[in-house]
Length: 71
Image 1 (tube, rainbow, N blue to C red):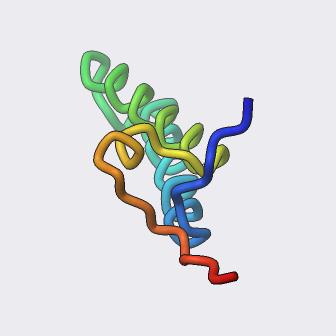
Image 2 (image 1 turned 120 degrees about the vertical axis):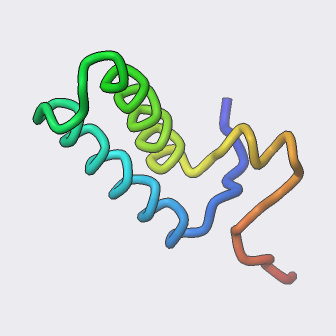
């Protein structure tokens, strides 16, 4: 099953960088234990949506940051 891309390349890059930074903060111990779990979940969501190019929240809200291709 192929999901339609609804993220622009810049949006994807920001999500991937944000996910890596949040994951590094949580694993590095910069965030306290109870909050670290939430930070890891947010980092994982950012990484997965950035790599896949598809954001479920964008799909629900019918938002797309992809440029419109004309025929």
